[in-house]
Image (cartoon, rainbow, N blue to C red; front, top):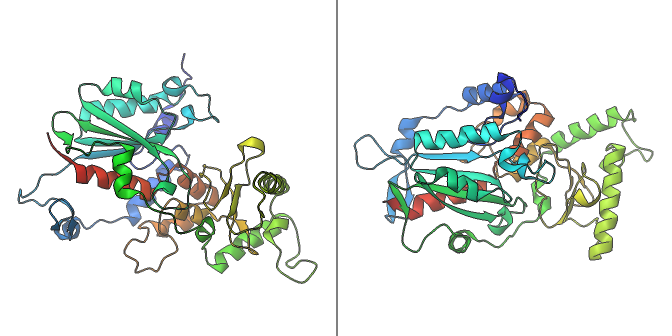
Length: 362
């Protein structure tokens, strides 16, 4: 009934607390993260930030003086392939059931104060609630970063499981989409081309790599640097031209406008074509877009930017991605896989903030 798997294959597909990690560089990535992320807990514990519950400055983390109680929370991304149109739609009975089952067992064994579960919006929440019945009460909503002001499409289901013995929602603040968007809905001000923000030298390296792969001279017939349109793989260019025709025909718009984006690695009806915001990123995505006349494929590190990680910011920026230094250690397809599997930082951050603000002791 089940496909036999080696121990390595099982460990590599277990659900991580930050994102679903299914790639062969699992062990290497974790090791690099441990090297580059160093948290000074004493500094964090003693740091103050504005608290909307008490309307004053409170500690970011509970201290050791017993003045506040710690809240244990599990944040996990359930493997999404069994629920997608690209998968077999086997759901909980798919090949990735072992990792999902392991995750459910962990929730039942650890009994956290709360858990946030992210997956695509087609996930079967009813059966998950049945498995956790008696330990947790579940509430689930689906939304995209575009609902909270980001120019990136990524419709996902966010399920909050609260420990029935110790946590409950505050009166009038149950986890519903209407309540959630009352606080986090935001009008989008930026368009998709603002995600194409890599420095010129990084863009030129990618341009040269594509040119060399096609065995083309350094300059085109006009003595200028090659346009990306003419050096991307032929299959990508074919998909791009089809997407441009499709968009122009259906919406009577100029595909050369700044807001046009599309997936270069998808064809036909599966090709995601968007105006004004980015299509949902996949593990093997290559997205076309950017401001005219400099349209180009989205760089791998820019995929992380689309997912809300601040990559192209000054070194002194307070929210700069803490593990940015490890990116040169990874290949481009590995970075794309990380981004394609990642939760959108702004979206999951908003859900965490809602749980912290609107739950209380039972």
